[in-house]
Amino acid sequence: MMLIGGKVDYACTVRLKEGVTALAPLPKKALIRDLVTEIAPPDGRLWPRP
Image 1: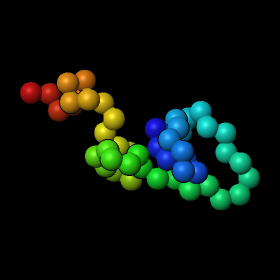
Image 2: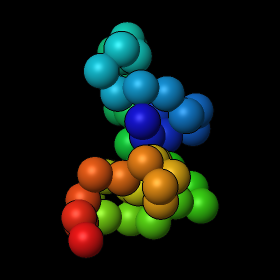
Image 3: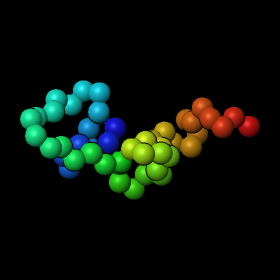
């Protein structure tokens, strides 16, 4: 999930329109890298394992 054209949506399902589209990471989520944010709750994360 990410901000696509100002709306939160799944990047794999959104249909892009012709022209320039703004992409941004999810707001209020921990940024991991580039556009990747942490979306799983702490108890549901697989990594890092104790």
